[in-house]
Length: 467
Image (tube, rainbow, N blue to C red):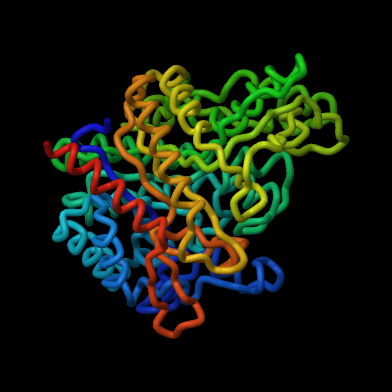
């Protein structure tokens, strides 16, 4: 049912679990700054300590072993390794920490998948313009090369950037994520462009300097909902447009044409003309003299959580913004159950449909599902029956995508190993396979029922694979 070498994993991110925000020479990140500004995060929560994985890594490793994972996805804190964001100052304590994590994983026969950037830009680089600055891409490339050089003898699966869509839109259009900017209709497109440039530079650096010896694979993790048209005639085009503005924004340049989707550019330019924008195209163009973005992914890394129906409309406002550019609205199907947070409708079949779409649209790439999960809010439920069923149902849909649709799925990573700092929701939302008791000074980890069930699923299929 699953390939013999299928990756069974779980994921985390540095700011969400590590803590130690000032420990051993680490520099501040934009999430340190954002969380310390009043009113930014639920309950004034922050990641200063989080799960304290910086000191409690061995506890995390026990959790990983208890699940029977073959792979573990983690991210490096750029500011822990390079406190000012540049290679002029390397924090050896940070290097030692990640060396230990990687070596411990490998000693337990668990393969690391490392994300270089999971939302936490060094504050020193934000002070120089952040992702709005073209120079940040060059600095990211230098950081990536440092990591490939330092850790690439042991790390064979790399993610350059996690969810550039979220970084661009929530961080620079909506102001809901760090750095908390609200510059609608302009900044997000520039940020997304510079992130794609950064990714392309890093991929080419790996290919030219490290691939032959290290024999690893490099991609970027793209988030997408499965989007279905509503019932009206205009909704089909609206759904295609919405998909172009989310998944297509980053996947089209990397996998299809080397440029943004035509429908995306034409919609943005039409809105610019309608509203009298005179600042040139708001969607930047890739320069001929820079590393090509087309073909810069060795696999397709997908973060999937939910699905939406799409209806036309919403693009007739009088301000520049991404909402008007899209001229489409997401709506929930009332038959879909909601888990925890209001946006997370439980639609396991949507993942299968999205996987088939990726196969058909992006030339049948190898796919790793790098995030997929089910949230819990309110009263703690260690016996989380709904989440247990969710994992069973979802993994069943992945099996169908492989067997019946012929999608080349190579791995599945549950989000998340641990309850952790869930960005603007703080600790109020729990995605973990293990509960972390944040009221306990020891930050004790307790496996959820869903963790036990996921471990059974892994054990079942690993036994089948070994026969």
